[in-house]
Image (cartoon, rainbow, N blue to C red):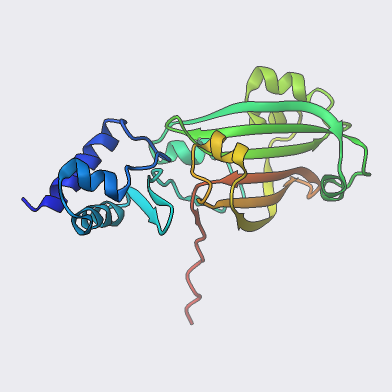
Length: 235
């Protein structure tokens, strides 16, 4: 067996055994060449093989890192994180980071049709897929419209169920703006990713069945986004 393949398989076994987990940095080319007693060209060939398999990602000057398994998320009019993940045979989970009432800033107020300074519900959560963190989301709701949201959410643990029990049987996405940036130190730690891996930032507005602003949200995620276009009309 070629030496580079031996190295590639050895590193892959370590990753499968979770000796190296998503976001972890692999040993340097120098360290690997000493460990396996080969030249750096052979190590680079092994790392290239792992890249081709989508197991690691390498960046010039930064090294190689274990890549997080990708779960592409589709842009939908009815975005439901847990349902979407379960449909793909994965296990979703959310962890509440912050849940409070605070004064609306100018951006959130404008999106929700409020005045700056009016009370809003602020919820920040970390999303997990198969216990791997994949995103941090911030949710803003009018406190005057949902005065019992905090107590209800603490019991239900679900935004959708809390809204249903608050008299909102359905809601849809009105708009989404997507940008990308590098994570902060805190975001990198929370999502277990290196600082050079960009995040996709979604700023969105959800509306109720009457078209009224319901939720303004900001999501920072490591997942890919899939946009499906309808088939062109045939003559």
